[in-house]
Length: 113
Image 1 (cartoon, rainbow, N blue to C red):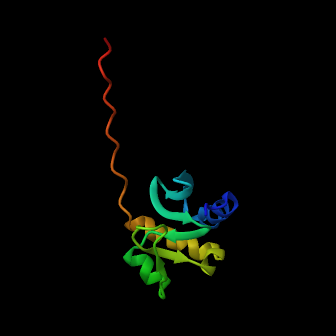
Image 2: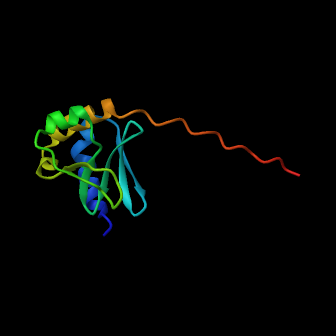
């Protein structure tokens, strides 16, 4: 089941205080970005945060689940999603541990004949 855009926008709004947050549709679901880093996924109207040591420490009793079949487990966020300040703190902690994306290789142009 694909996620509703309304849920994705709500999740983004709840973490928007953390900084530059955006989302992109990917494979029928959504990736949430913080300063160009993928820090979360929205699948089946559920928010999955990338697992980090600091995030695990902040959450405490962590619920982990794969966002889609075959994926590595992520932190599944439940009722905490309604706590804007808590979510913003979690996103900032997560982003501080998630590596920056690798630079994209320049596409080579074929010689025109």
